[in-house]
Image (cartoon, rainbow, N blue to C red; front, side, top):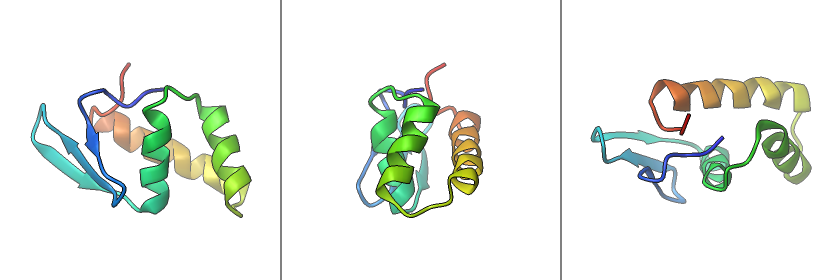
Length: 80
């Protein structure tokens, strides 16, 4: 899974798609996830990374990451 190369992101959570002109915002964890998605990371590796860094319930985070990835996909921000 990889964020499209033309998608601009900031540490503050700003996401911009220059192809469509659409912009979005995310929370700090979302911004961290986006930075990992620039590295072509798979779902399991991403979940392991975040769960090892933060005190989160793994099952809940798996649901949350699936929702987040679905939103990114719906907004055409991820490579196929």
